Amino acid sequence: MPTRDDAYRLMTEHVKNLNLQRHMLAVEAAMRFYARTYGEDEELWGITGLLHDCDYEEYPDLQEHTRVLAGWLREAGYDERIIYAILAHNDLNAETHPRSDLLSKALYACDEITGLVTATALVRPNKSILGLEVSSVRKKMKTKGFAAGVNREDIVRGAADLGVDLDEHIANVITAMSGIADELGLAGTTPSNGATASSSPETSEAHQAARSE
Ligand SMILES: [Fe+2]
Image (cartoon, rainbow, N blue to C red; front, side, top):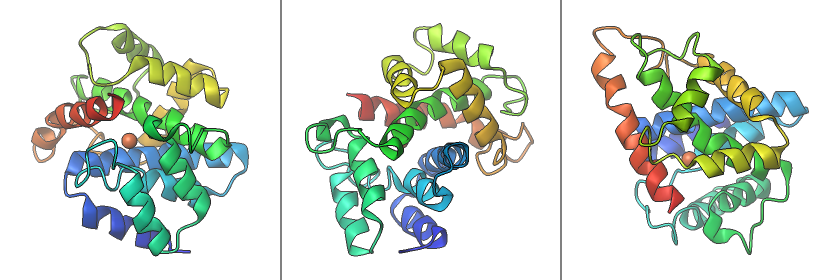
C-alpha cells in the first residue's frame, strides 16, 4: 500500500492548479479529523481525501472523473476502500458505488463544505480561517450568489448521511482546516500570499460547479 508521501506525489503530478491542490489538502485534513473521531484508520482516510479529485484537472468530464483515477490507484496498489469511496463521491456512479460505508459518507460530507469554508474565510478582511465562526459560514450558505458553485443541498445531505449536525460538522471542518491554515493559504493576509489567496474562490467554485452538475 502506497504511503501518504506517495499519494501526495501522485496528486501533485496530476494536479498543477494550486487551488485544486489546496482543496484536496483541505478535504484530507477534514477526513483525518473524522477518522480520529470515529476511531478509523487516519492514514487511509487522509489519503482518500488527498486523492479524491486527482484526475479532475486532466479529466473534468464527470463521466470520466473518478473512473480514470480508480484505474491509476488500482495500478499503484491502493486499498480498494479508498478507490470505492472516491468512485462513490461522484453521483454518476451512484448505482455501482452507493455511499453505504462510513468512509464514502465522510468523503462526500467533507467535499463541498470545505469549498464554502474556504470561500467564507477569504472574504474576511484578514482572509484567515483562524477564528472563523460557524455562524459566518451559515450566513454565507444562505446568501444566494455567494460561492454559487457550492451546492448547498449536497452540504446538507452530506452531513445528514454522515449523521452529524450541520453546525457541528462546519465547526469540525473549520478546526481541521485551521490545523493546516498555512498550507491552505488561509493563515491570514501577508504581502506575499494575498494575491494567491484572493484568486482561490473562483477556481474552487469552478471546480465545485462542474462537479455538481
Ligand atoms: Fe472535491
